[in-house]
Length: 238
Length: 238
DNA sequence: ACTGATCCTGACCGATCGGTCAGGATTCAT
DNA sequence: ATGAATCCTGACCGATCGGTCAGGATCAGT
Image (cartoon, rainbow over all chains, first blue to last red; front, side, top):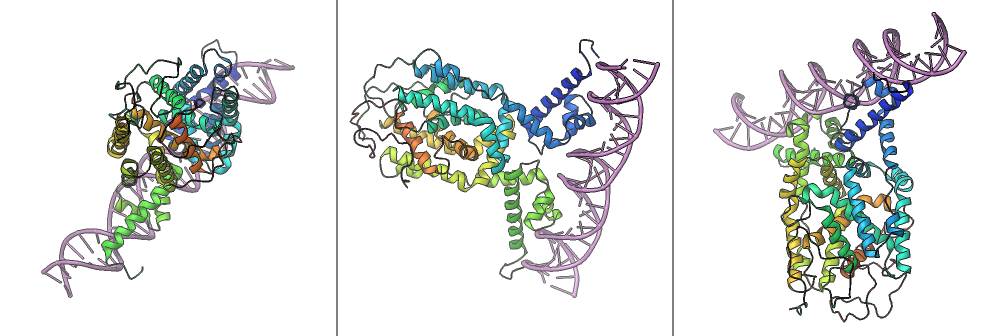
């Protein structure tokens, strides 16, 4: 073995981590039932017995992987809360960041989405309280303060706004492979442009804009899509 | 056996259907790898060999279940396209209907969401083209015609609007078990109220409304200031 | 009554599953 | 050097996996 490792505990921790990494990849790819302990051992480059030495059962290994995922769910909320720029700019930054993190840690994202389909009501509570609620509440709190400062409509349920933004991102992530094949979709390969459109729609709605309210938030969507003639004056409904 | 069945082919078709139903339930619940052919046979009330008589391999059974799901993905787009009422009303009806169908056929929904996490790029194309694209394109077409008639902003990518609406619904469906436990969320048990908020936000955006748009687009514009209290509206059926 | 086709079953197959076990290395503390 | 503890392995276990097979029913056509 290489001499730099301090001792057996160090090497062991490394092995343990390799097993976790292998398990994370495989579980995310094929699901709990679709992965064998032998396959995990092989991918980690150790014997199957060694896997059982570190994790007594398959389920405990799965839980350990999920637990590790939990440490990585911190969302970058600081910039949204106290960053520079207009609220629209910050919201756009946050949404883009969230989507980027989903795709960057796609294994973990897939794993958690899989878990959502697997769990009954019991585990849902754990997942909700121990993993997601803190960030979700923080996000909602920020939105609520945005309402108090007049940057957001006050008659909205901020939790609904949060659900729409996060949910749209999650769906974009999990359905990206489909969206790629829809001829109408030009943004499948371009998460940033999708984020722009999402925030634009969230901010302004989809109804025809009336007079220009002197909005300087951001320019029109630059990339990809079919440039449609700007809505000069909405024609009277026929 | 009951005497009403005409013959063996009839009984066979019935057996085949029972196997498919059992497989659909189990696949949706535990995923492809988490279900054994024995378990499917047991739930269908037949022998394992009988299952293999009707479906030569486990994978072909899985495909048959997915294929059956495809027949049920028809979304009620007629009312959105040619129904009565304002565009806002029709859009709200469509969104609510879509979400209701997701939860009504929750096994199928879960199955397809699971498949989204399982497939590589090859099958994604099949799924996209053979299952979803038709409805998606139709929806986009309707939105586009809404743009031409001035009911929708013309500077938007209608596919993005569709993705946001459908994606938010899908996310609400798959994360409902989590949302139930978020203290900020009051709409987890109430899809209709969530749909209302979603359409409201989609239509008007989340920015503070400017005064008196003089807009005739939709009816339920409350006079004067908005009620600050979120949600809790009496459910509005279409 | 006979044939051919389909439906369905219990028994069975090799492979793989999750998990165990005894024991060889390696390392730390003494 | 030696004992204790941990790391890791090949060999192995019973159970279950996906899938096969020969054959008993049941039916339609003749």
